[in-house]
Length: 320
Image (cartoon, rainbow, N blue to C red; front, side, top):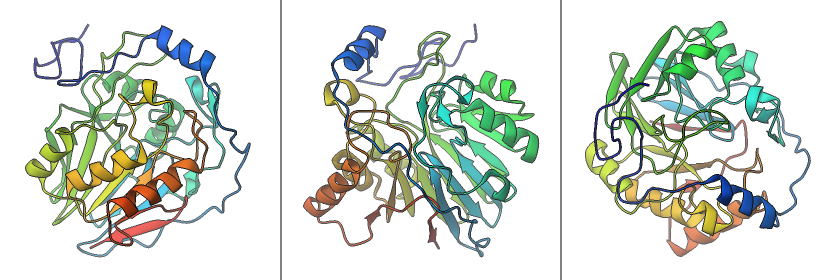
């Protein structure tokens, strides 16, 4: 069994969150499933397939939302894909578990050359081995992931794998740097020991521009303020707004839209885009509920128009 550096979030073998660690026990999952009354979602939402935008110019980054937590980040120095999921289900082998309700907005074969994949943690809705295997075969990218996740990359066929602890950075090419950042979450797949793989967000810096990808996270009243102080306010933040009900179960692992607004402010992001909604029914709220809740929270916080936006699958934003 591998050993890891002892820190405020690792005892050498098991990872945990500083101060407040969620205890996600099998009985609590069973109780939630037996007592929940989930809202009805549509069986399928038809969306138009799109091609990625033109390559960005110097000093620009283009972010295209494909689905769930999958973004294509195009930079002049290389293209990066976050938590890629192209399978029909988020579950074992991509064939079992929760089914998607819309197709990936950018077809796999329409992706430009991918230089790196950022894998935030091992949960099936973020770590889809069939998709990772396709990417490894088609693009041979670098896999950048938190400590303990290299075994998943090897299973998917990646030849280049970089594991990072929180705050460690990797330079993909001069001027393009990825830093692993803290997130409040947990890890486990169907088999194996719980929390033996670390979870993280990522800060992508290309020249003077930065994008913060939060991965999967609950709100923390210190963590994201520290990210801002260490790495500076990002030009763009990609923040989760879905899978938050019921709160007794989800509050230690997923943000509400109102908490995502506070996360946006803690980071000091110039602009944020919502993710982690609308593709997989992972919790009890309706598909549309996060959108109205985000609009209400943004109004209460008096955010400027366009400061925290919802885009549709396949749409893009540019910074720079």
